[in-house]
Amino acid sequence: MAFGFRFIHEKSSGTGASERRVVDLQQREVIFGRGGASHVLLSSHKVGTEHAKFFWDGEKLLVADLASPTGVRVNGRLVSRAELHDGDTVLLGDVELTLRLDGSIAELTWLEAPQASIPDAERIASAVGKLRVDSYLPSIRALSIVLVALGTVAWLAYPLGTSSKRQWSSGPISSQHKLIENDCVKCHAEPFKPVRDQECQACHSMSEHAQGYSTFVSQHAGLEMRCAQCHMEHNGDHALISRDQRFCTSCHAEMSKLKPGADIEDVSSFDQHPQFRIEVRDALGAVTKVSLDDSSRAKDSSQIKLNHKLHLKQGLEGKDGPVTLECSACHQLDENFKQLKPIEFDKHCRDCHSLGFDERLPEAEVPHGDSEAVFPALFAAYSRVVLLGEDQSLPNPARDMERDKPGDLDPEPAQIEGSGVSAVVENAREAERQLFTRTGCFLCHSYKEKPELLQTSTNSHYEVLKPGVPNVWFTAARFSHGAHEEFTCESCHEKTRESTQTSELLLPGKKMCQDCHASGRRQGYVSSDCVECHSYHDSLGFPHEKKQDIASYIKGLTR
Image (cartoon, rainbow, N blue to C red; front, side, top):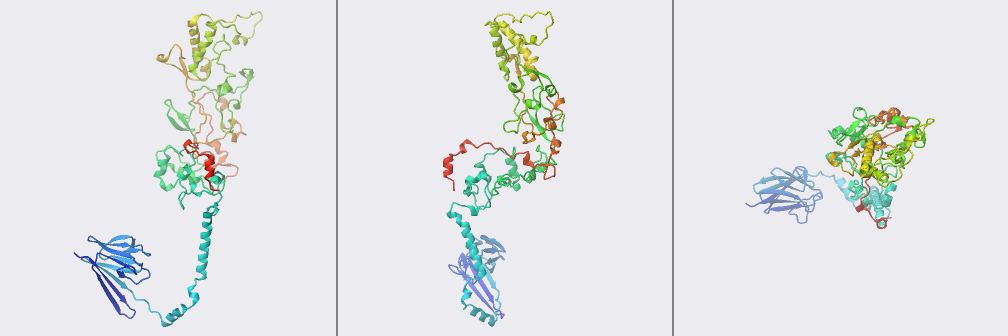
């Protein structure tokens, strides 16, 4: 079967007469265009020199655009290559071809409409106008557009020949990024595209916003969560960290919908903030977030015995006489004047709480902080007396606290009876039992006795349970005690002086904070947006493998 083409050109004149031209081409492909290597010539300035190629591929007829200036449209759809069928219309510039398939012959017909006739006067005026010199010069408007375009290009291109990129900058750079002010590609790796997170993470190492955040972002691509959404550069120093809470509430106002089943409550503003929650750890170590309103579960599970009412009582017996404690005696601000320092036994407790174990050895105490060191310390203390014969005739502190009655004789100093290693062990074990079950350790700590299988002749038979006192209760929030220094502790921590149990939480709820803080700008209230108390993420410190030599870094800068 011989494949070929037939081109039919019908042209009508304004008087009703028409011309018809038929060209038969016995070949499998033809090129339509205005010149060049075109097989079929089309007299239209909107048609390219070699505009399109029609060709047979097996028994299929296809058309391909040959990089034409105005493109190829099949049935109104712009294509670069397409299969053709009987009845299709193909538009090359302003030339519309209608296809009819006659077996193996593709017949393409161009019905050229007649051009409107131009009056003789207009044709003469047009011809005369072309003889004027100014008709070949650009208009004032066109000249102005060209000059403005050239000036804009020159202004934008100027930084290419200098180290200054100020013309390309949309505003002043922040102090944190001043070193790379002229190295635009440090952040703008791809021209005319938003700054990507990977450019930020090349220099900054931050914690993930929340567990599973990467998965959340991939599931909600429409939210377009990027570093540069909150950290907006080229606004000077005041806008590098945005405080606009809409960045937070765009997700958290409807988190229950965005992440169903998550243990996260919806928050639209601080005024509508749910009650604060704390992390409570059960006996197996599992952590659960509990609202302060849930009084049955919101308890301090620390393994420590603390009676605030007793400690704040006036005239307590101290090392150097009666003392009256205030909150600041134990709760002291750290060097940053924000958080409270952890309680330390040697600094805050030892003056009133002795770790002595035997009134016959008033100067001897067991060490604090390691229950495994208690029995070895007791064994060593009794060994010095029983085995080495050190002087044990020392004053009895318990006796010194008693008032003598007229006629009483001074009692003889108590003596440690027995001899040999067995006497040492017997006295040490008894002292250990007293410390853990009645005196010293027992007064403040919870303990447990080791199973017999773990008890040896040389180790301690008791161990103190880890206190587990939280240094920060609201782990997801930032709070500065120093910023509230002008107020008394009991203004927020109510009922402290009546508290007798460690389990009693003395934390302020949201209502107390809302007495001073509010969303937006309300007269008489502290304006408090999300970042006032919450951090989006925390710095992890820069990885060692990414650190650079400062001299080499500065040498590579553009200044």
